[in-house]
Amino acid sequence: MVSGINIPPDEPRYVLRDSFTLPADVDAIGASGYAHLLAREMKLTARLPGGGTRGLLWIDRWDVAWQETYYFAAPVRLPRGTVIHSEITYDNSAGNPRNPSTPPRRVTWGPTLTDERGGLTLLVAARDEAGAAALTAARAQHFQELLVRPIRR
Image: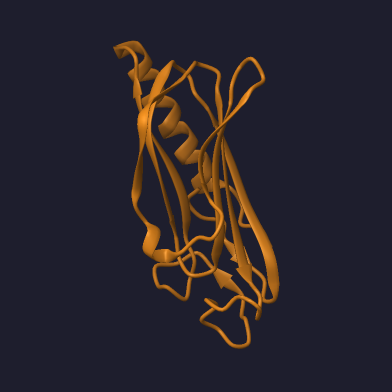
């Protein structure tokens, strides 16, 4: 997730979602999350081509101090065609003790802690050079699509 954050005041559950289909077989080695003060929950899951689901990262009580990379105990093999789903939930209500605005105000994407950001990253290694090239191209295309996505109102 890059931009598109536009959280209305008093919104207790503003959710941003994204997905990315792996164009190659990969080994996932870790995951990281990034957000500011209004984020409450982060999830990163993999929907395998056969229909199964694998949890990769879930932080159910986000804290801005947890912007770390979390490495898996062992690589997680994900086959080509796996869909990676990311979801970040924000709480811009007066009931959120971390909300820096009283009363809550509209919050958009920006660099300061009173703005918001959000991103989940899955660290992967392709299994071969052709897979690495496909992954690089697909990632660049996905990033470009995120940049032109309209902001939710």
